[in-house]
Image (cartoon, rainbow, N blue to C red; front, side, top):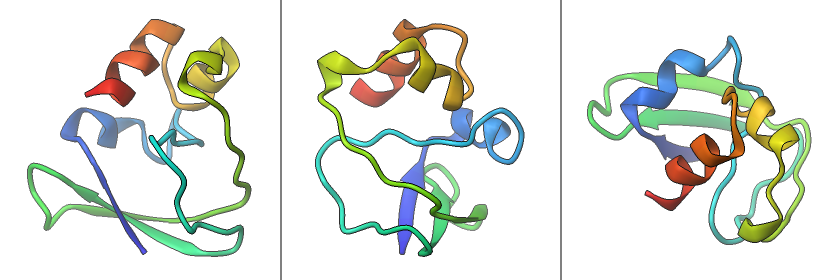
Length: 83
């Protein structure tokens, strides 16, 4: 499965980022291989394995989720998810 990520998110992969938030529900299950593809340059990719899937409403996102995403504040995460 391929998922697109914006260029500014790629430096967080494999470093600070160990989670990703998405609008809507996806058919993603633990154990699946994911290929993240950079929106601005599809030749740049990052491979990952899904270890856990959980769902919450956008309004219920927390600082803990933001930190798993590699951000210092909840506002940073919400800004990225909204765009």
